[in-house]
Length: 302
Image (tube, rainbow, N blue to C red; front, side, top):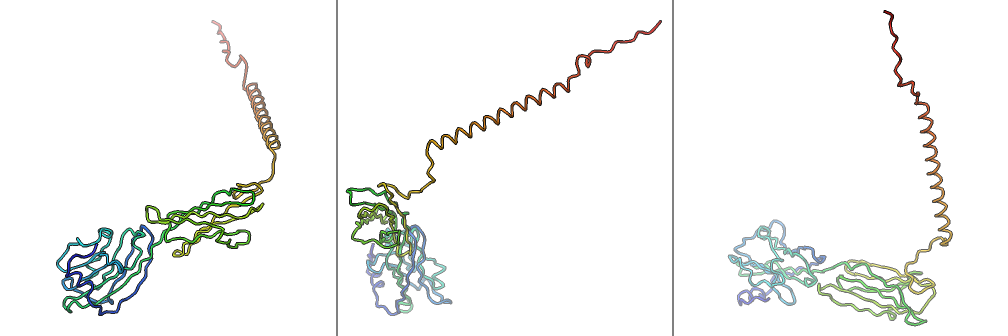
């Protein structure tokens, strides 16, 4: 949204008298970021004297502003409403920095901070242009198992989503880490509903009995490379195959039955030992019927 008031438009496009400072900052999608616009430390400003404007440099979209004795922000563009704030206490100290919340890909542009002094005849006292670079991590690439549309060709597909900015895609021969000819790949890159990039790359390469291929998604802004490989074996469709010691099914079965037989034997021995020990204990502890038979009383002579 653009300012509709002629007075505000006049202020926004007044002649520039201060040197414009250039700054750059980077932010991740969904994070909060501060766009710096500040006078030297020790500066003091009267909020009833200064006019502060934040707008995008190219489209002149109104991000936020401060006008003395006017708390209305009706002219702020809907994309920035409740997302862009300045601190009144900070402005009194000469800090007119913008706090931008929940950064989106659409926020990647140049923002212009303009501070004017009414007591100086609306002279510009500070002008700063901040370039905001926005980034988002791509998902780990998923490389489909290769298939062979013909006897002489293999096809690999690599997919990665929800990244920013637009990625570079490379296919790598992981045997010697050399880059494959980009003429062999067909990349489809598009913006999804979140304003982030999804990419699908299809590689067509001559058939080879054993081929170790990697797909690399490069995010230049984050200096990030995500690489996932897919390896073919003697059979088409093998992926990241792990070779184990060759053991036949018959050998595995024989080993299993041997272990079970030993376990059963150990159990039987344990039971037999238990019964023998119990029998010996009963024999030693039993005193016969005499143990409970009362002794006869001796009758005395009268």
